Length: 74
Image (cartoon, rainbow, N blue to C red):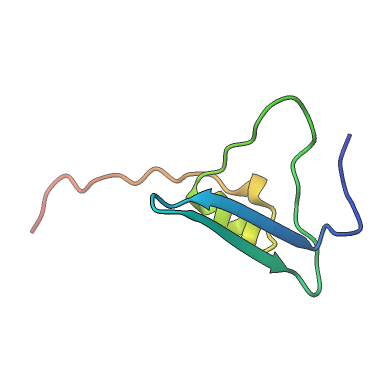
């Protein structure tokens, strides 16, 4: 079951920054946020996925990229 409401163009994020509670709110003007399916499990987003969600992109398509360290310098 996919959950959508009339307010799928709005998001509110509440977090603790170590000294108090912060609230971030955003409303998209031309698109809707890509919400996860409703279920008994929590959804954890990494930094890149959260940025994609806030920008109105499909955060489920964001994957971490492995970066290889150079073998030698110079």
